[in-house]
Length: 143
Image 1 (cartoon, helix red, strand yellow):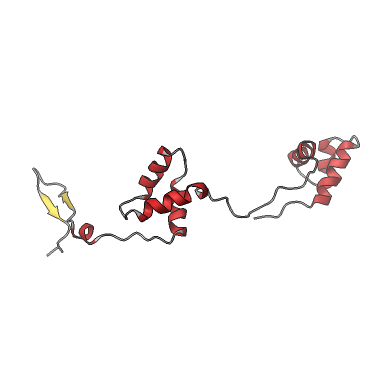
Image 2 (image 1 turned 90 degrees about the horizontal axis):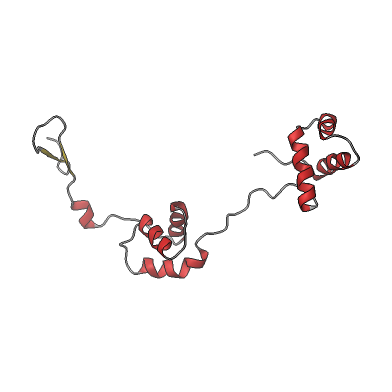
């Protein structure tokens, strides 16, 4: 990612515009884009400084206020899915993304393991090209 222009350059451009030069002339003089100078002037009017906004940092954790409820819910049993937790949170009035729920579960250091029962269920699908209800059992090795 590129670095923002220096505050000194931004302040010089804004000062030239305030002194009566056109934005286009200032952009040409300082070898900048016209829209860049316009944005800096607009930002200086709105906030009092043409300085760039901070880059990077950590995103605020979206589920911080639901942390206690989520920990209790997940401790109640391993029978939850991320989409299910997201739906339950929506019912409680907290709309979050699937990724936010995933990051919370990962931070809580929970893992997803298939149960022994789930690993023994045979996946059966119809064999393509066969008429009727021919079923191929995918749980057995081909032989």
